[in-house]
Image 1 (cartoon, rainbow over the protein chains, first blue to last red):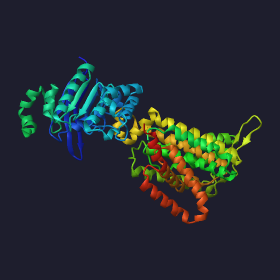
Image 2 (tube, one colour):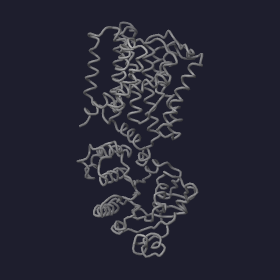
Image 3 (spheres, rainbow over the protein chains, first blue to last red):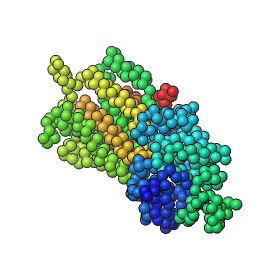
Image 4 (tube, one colour):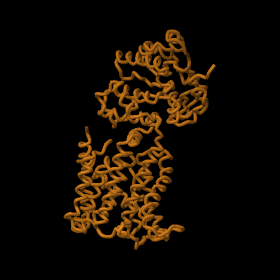
Length: 237
Length: 320
């Protein structure tokens, strides 16, 4: 059997003596969609930061398609196929939407034409010359995703893609994400709080509790896990 | 600014090119020197406005270019011939190499580009000035005098750039070429990468951009332009001294660039020409009051035109 696309083994990371990630292990196959849920402060964003290289793990392994990448800087990991969006959209606020996509295309070694095509595809052509920071939140998120997709990632890490969106918008994001994974064969790991969105995603769910992956499986099964109910779902009613 | 509008630049250079038709020789000579300063101003505008790297040591590279020209022009470099032309080449090469070294320290040490970065550049500039004062090889605090001028190899015999008119025209050509080249660079894909890193280096890295490499290249390019300005300045002035690479000049450039507009090298160049020309005309008349007047001007500009007097204007023209 070939190696999983992403393999995290016993990752540990602490900040000032507080364990943020405490031996988390996770596997993601090529083209797989997985939602990562968990209460605030359970280590989801730190886990993302470890995978993308903002933070270095104190122990454990991070492998992409069997290759250890734990020591590489973020830009090298991007070139190996990891794309990431941020909770606060990672657009360059003072640059125009068009220029944001041009930066992404240039960074990916693609012609500017592709940036302009992406602008059309994302439905942002009307806002091309507006500063990205002035766009409404939802459009900034769409712009960010379009920028990340220009890198043609094999693995997408999405940090709360529906934060600040209305329910209808979040459901549209879920549908778009499902289509993307099905059409392009991209694997995606989605950190999310919004359980309606997670259900709409129709994907497997992994639950992170106190720095570990505590449960994983279909939404219904995970949601009935007593530990998960007590720590997370229960608190949300 | 992501684009330098071409038309104002061409109009500006055309007006300057027509200046010899009526301007007196002394003014042309003065403008030739100020265009050397203008190169320094453009280098800082690129680094600061486009790259977000506020440097208090930009004159270090200007001075290094001037000293490199002086040493080669006087034949003081071991194994190398006495040659002003070689001096001009070194005036670009030495500051670029110096910036690569200093840049490794500043950029790769992951110093945040806020106050810590600015203070470190300031320290570098002070070190450079002290070294020049302490070094007998560089002429100590007296500097080096009697530098040969540059000579253009023309068919009818070499033309030495001594008289105001040929000096002015040569500087005009060089400064114009550099300004247009920087404008192209700013509009090019690599220019937008620099602005992306300025906005957010971490997010740039998440698009696969190496922020350290991008900043280092900008630092080196700015040093090359500043060094070229320094070399040409030394060639006209015939004399170099430690203040050319010191903190005083480094802060003066900041004023020119802030007055002109840091978003655009052209605006910064106009700022340099304007402030230096005003200093030439009013300095003597105002005496000790000149620095006060300059300070007042800077205050007004920062309050009324945060993008600089010409920067805001050009940005409006650049808008599609």
